[in-house]
Amino acid sequence: MKPKVWVFVEQEEGKAHPVSWELLGKARELAEALSGEVEALVLGQGVELIAKEAITYGAERVYMIDDPVLEYYRNETYAHGVIKLCEKYRPEILLLGATTMGRDLAGSIATALETGLTADVTGLEIDPETKNLIMTRPAFGGNIMASILCPDHRPQMSTVRPRTFPLPEKDETRQGEIVREDLGLSENEVKVKRVGFIPKEKTVNLEYADVVVSGGRGLGGPEGFKLLRELAELLDGEVGASRAVVDAGWIDYEYQVGQTGKTVRPRVYIACGISGAIQHRVGMQNSDLIIAVNTDPEAPIFRIADLGIVGDLYEVLPELIEAIKKE
Ligand code: FAD
Image (cartoon, rainbow, N blue to C red; front, side, top):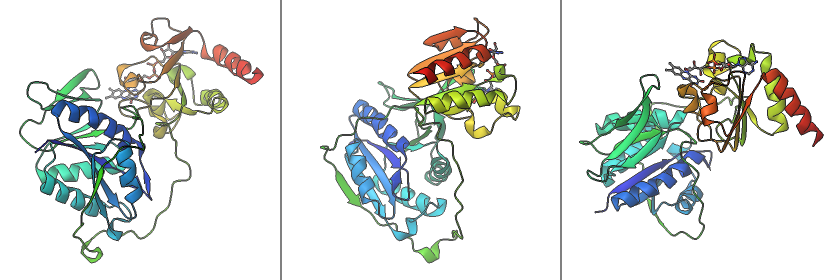
């Protein structure tokens, strides 16, 4: 039997999270190195369209559990479904997004299957000799990159942050198989019930922004974000931040970019008054174009910047804003 590389396709209210497609792209590479197959898991209610979409992103086979018990996410019901499928089909690798749902689910699955789990990986490859999965992630405060193996247990499991891998091309002509499976769990067996749902008023869509204008300690205070917001709005982007300013309480944690914040991959990343510590860089170094504004010509951010401006951000940004407004 060919080794199976599995991706858990995360969906909410019939909409798939893009990290699932990013993982399918990576899974194709891994399956090729293993001479294996790429398969997806789709759980929920009314999810057939998502199962079909998974095929367009590269799944050769989709295991689908479509059941009213799975109408909304609960660890108990979703973990039950995934564990059941893993026990039946024995995948070699199982990848999930390092999202709120993925992180919650992955731990329960790994515990039940008595296997290892590497969280928040930044790299995945197959060892050409042993065919084991090499999972890379920052360790010791981001000072080293650790290569983690799970040689004796299956599946080899990882959670991967959104935007770590690029979105693959969608191909509507791709053919694949949808295998319908039963959950085998009725609503009255489930202990957790949802009594209400209050959506958050505004959420920051940093990970999928095309332009991110980020500020660091060089802003000098929270009021500096007004200038960054003005520039971000002109460029149809979002504001980001370093951990130093989040820790200082200048801006909320949801804006933090980096190892303990979000991973972004915009077309343009503008780092203003950010030194470029390794823990910040791991969250933004895959951006297409990096522009840095910093008074210190030796700042590490210039090592990865495509365009570096040595200067005071309070002089550079107003000029940039004026120039954009004139266009
Ligand atoms: P600083 O390092 O103080 O840099 C400020 C920069 O602003 C300097 O380069 C200075 O030259 C420049 N500057 C000053 N005035 C101006 C001006 N007027 N105009 C232009 N430039 C100016 N950091 C993150 O960002 N994200 C993370 O997720 C993260 N996770 C971490 C996890 C761990 C376990 C640890 C130990 C650290 C983590 N850090 C993280 C912290 C990281 O190590 C740095 O301390 C932090 O990124 C520094 O933030 P900064 O660049 O804003 O501040």
